[in-house]
Length: 236
Image 1 (cartoon, helix red, strand yellow):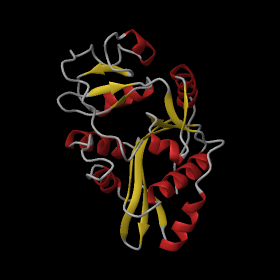
Image 2 (cartoon, rainbow, N blue to C red):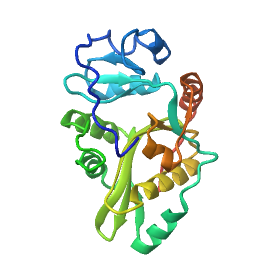
Image 3 (cartoon, rainbow, N blue to C red):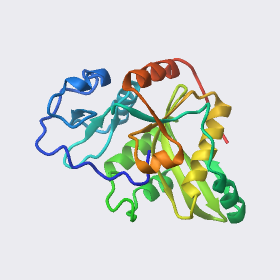
């Protein structure tokens, strides 16, 4: 989950792996010659395949010229027990009169996350990604956080929920600190809803500044398995 993540260019010349579901995240180290964390190439972004992937600790990243599937080691997360927001976030929220919602404009958040910015000149959020995740949202398996200044959408994020797992996908801001505020609100609601794992995928300097930390893939899969076994609810 990042604002600065751009489409990967490392899938050129890679053959398609077998059907996703036969390749597990803990087998990634065996793929000699592949970029670190890449576990499969090809297939479609249909919602059932996405659910299979997330349950195995795998997420898609880019779809041009083919979908690539990743399970990095180490894995970035926001620790729900220890994470605290930056002190400037509250001031920015009060100054802007921001209000926060969940699932009021899922498609709008996705489109905003796909806009070109100085941090992200190109996007991996293609029409295929839009269709797939909007369908997951329709099924109640993908959710968005919106940050509003009046009637203007100024920040937000979206991700996938399965059991007590929230897989953060992307975020955006149109005001300083708005994406940080979206993360803070998400963490608050996840704690209230009984969630135990907030996935941030690949660590970046931007995520590190937001307070993301890393754990080993083995530890991530252990926590994921535990989170999938129990219910939780994300609500305002």
